[in-house]
Amino acid sequence: MTESWQDPKTIDRFLDDTRTWAIVGLSNDTGRTAYAIAQLLQARGKRIIPVHPGAAAEGVEVLGEKAYATLAEASAAVGTIDVVDVFRRSEAAGEFADQAVAIGAGGVWFQLGVIDEEAFRRTTDAGVPMVMDTCPAIEWGRRAA
Image (cartoon, rainbow, N blue to C red; front, side, top):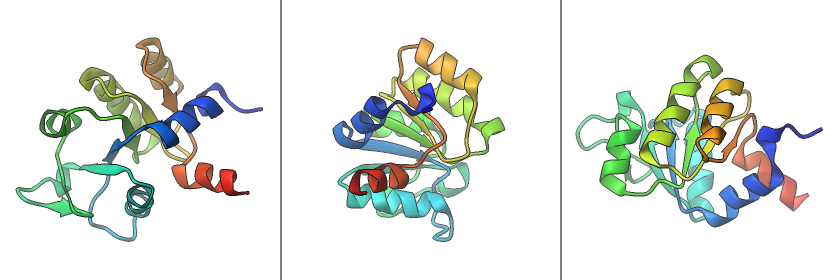
């Protein structure tokens, strides 16, 4: 059974109808999954906004986009963020869902293996759709199958 946090309509809307994705945990470390997924998102026409305290030194760019230390800084600089994609451990991810709600993001996506049921409840109760425990690459792959 598909969990409520993997609603196919929400996943499709995120993949098809969004443009700007803030990637929490994205740095220039090409060996990290966040980097590969950010590349995939760009290849699919999405604008990625790197959010990583360590990558946000003055002028640092990741995949051609300026990095920001926080979601609030990213939102203030680029405007509307459609999806906040979180590459953090489950126990650290919830605060980014809360920040996404605070900045008015259109949705939150927790990557494969990242589950925080309380964060899901808080986020969706605030009217912000959320996906957990899957990956855009997996979901696009399911469509091709």
